Image (cartoon, rainbow over all chains, first blue to last red; front, side, top):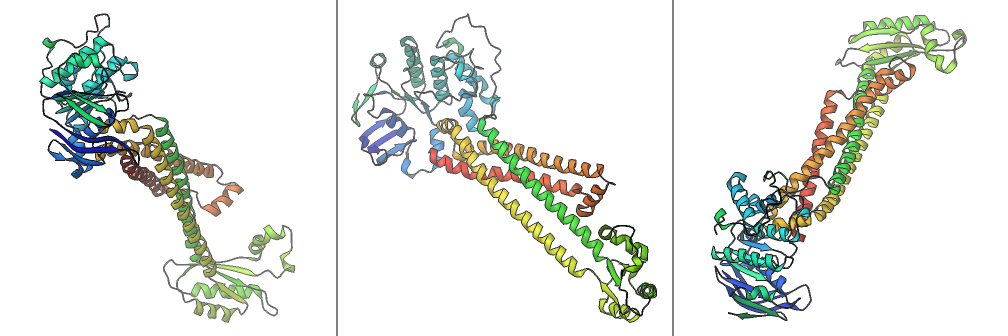
Length: 219
Length: 322
């Protein structure tokens, strides 16, 4: 589903932050991405999410060489990817329900076709009673779950999560991991970027370790 | 993935939180309506539309008044019979009046009497002056049937034949000057209008840039959920079109009120010396319904220009965000 060949990334004229990345992510797979701060985890996630283009090498996503794609095609590919960022990126003027329903709204679907699905998911992540709340009044954990719900609502083929348990307590972290595992079982390939060794120890999965811009894969 | 109730909730929030009435509807617009940048844009467009409407309204008023003057003056011929030694002024005036009445295409001839001629000079010479001591010429006003071609040369020859001291003036030179002045005023108005519109576009572009900078998180989130540039641009375009129209309606409406109010003031002063002078200069000071329609169309046009300027800025900004 994802193939990187000799991929390098640099910002402007600076040094390469990612070097010679060679890996594949099969469909339905689960992997953790880890490494010290500044190792390039977020940059790699951004490459995977197509918000950065590699400065060299080949990135093939869902069978498409991304260097050949235009902006509209990239936007279409992004609809197949869900992303959870460290700072949640919820829209403050929209309710939790509206934030989670946003991907469907962007797809142009009628609200009646997805309303029940959004409500069910919100209940499932424990936000059933916070559907009409605005993000500024949500707790960190609630925001995290709303961001995750938004990322998974359209059942993406690939889910990228950047430190998804960074702002929650260990108990909630374990529950969120359970959510990702459930998603993976339902067919979504999952990549979780985390520093949290304890979290990774809870689930047997492939580990990508980034160190000084290079990637080491531990099966 | 199954999202059924039997799976239970991922996080139990407990029973202490009362259940909220779940409206759970898409009620919020993707781009929030009220923001400081939005209000600034409405204010900019309103001010620019007001200035543009005032300019257009003034140009329309001047053009209409000038057209009225021109049509009044163009349908008149003035004959001046000067006193000449050895000739009887009253007889010459009567002879010219008769000659004019006999002329085809002249519908009305009004000779001014000695007293009436004196009254014309009162503003300069004051009252109580004996006109017998002054060589005051006599005026004869002839009204030409509109659309009748008049051979002015032949008319002049005929008039001077009966009264050698008479001169005929069809006000052509004055009308030409008036036409030049009106054209210059209209051109100046159009120039100001063009400047106002250019200033509007520049201001709107900056306001859009500011609004886009403030809404950058929204743009990024929309990208995250797979929205293309066209989708995002359309959402913002709708937002800016609404703001532009709002500003256009406020500015255009305020200008219409000013013209309506001025018209009322002109009506209140009608019949007073000031009002009469004003009416003589600017006619009825009325924009007429067609003028108000022009202002309304212009307000909508400025709203549309706002949207187009925003659209250009939007795509440039979206490229930057990428």
